[in-house]
Length: 186
Image (cartoon, rainbow, N blue to C red):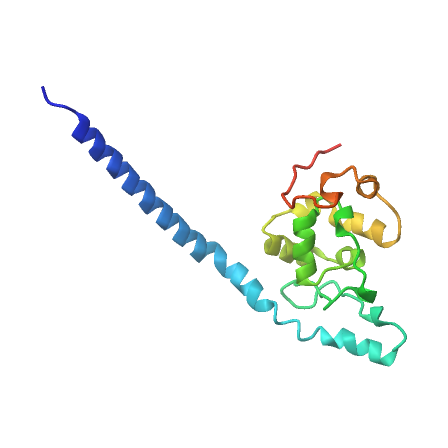
C-alpha cells in the first residue's frame, strides 16, 4: 500500500505557491491602479503655494487674521482651499459632524480643513476630491457633511452635535480610540 501523503503535501505546497503569487500580483495591481491617485494627492500637498494669497488679505486689514475666507475650490481638480492653521488659533470640533471621527478630523486638519464654513462651502467637484482623498466614496454626501456643516457654521446644532457635546458619542470622549465606528441611521 502506498501512502497519499506525498501527493497531499505536493498539492498543499502548490496551493500555497498559487496563493502567494496571487497576493503579489494583487498587491502590484493595487499599487499600479490605485496608488497613483494617492501619489498625485501627496504631490499636490505642497501646491498650496497659492494659499499665501489669502494670508495677504489680512495685510490689508491687519485687525483680524481670520480674513482668509475659504473658497469652494482652490484648483481646477476640485482640491479645497485650505488654511495653514486654524483661524484665531482655534479650530472647530469637526467631530460634531456625523461621519467625522477623530481619525478623519486629524486627516482633514492635516489637509488644512479646520472650520465648519470650509466644509459648508464645498461644491460637487470638491466633494468628489475629498471623497477620493479620504478613500470613502460617497461618504460626504451620504452622511450629509455639507448640510451639517452649514448649520454648525451658523452656530446652530444638530441632534448628533448635541450628543457629541454631551459626551454620549464614543468618539467624543477624551482618549477615544480613532477606530471608525459603524453609524446608525435613525
